Image (cartoon, rainbow, N blue to C red; front, side, top):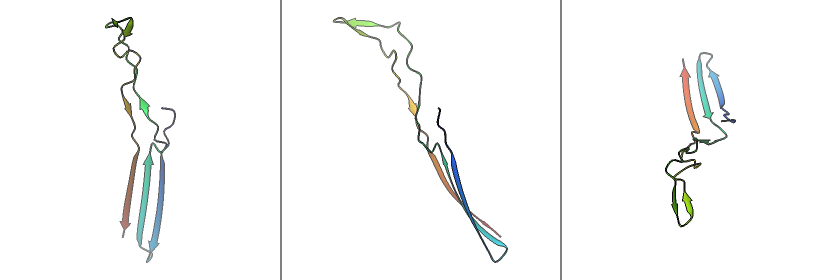
Length: 78
């Protein structure tokens, strides 16, 4: 969670002195940095087969989220 850059751009055009058209673009989590879950901590179910220990998920990260969101909007004022 070190990088979480958001960006927004807006452009507005005024015409006939009373009408305005505005376009806006937003991007959240622009760097698309993944957020990893915590590793498994349970070592109570260790099994041994032919001298190899199976730790049943200990130290394995099994979840990650990646939530880049972009949106575009337009607005007309009169």
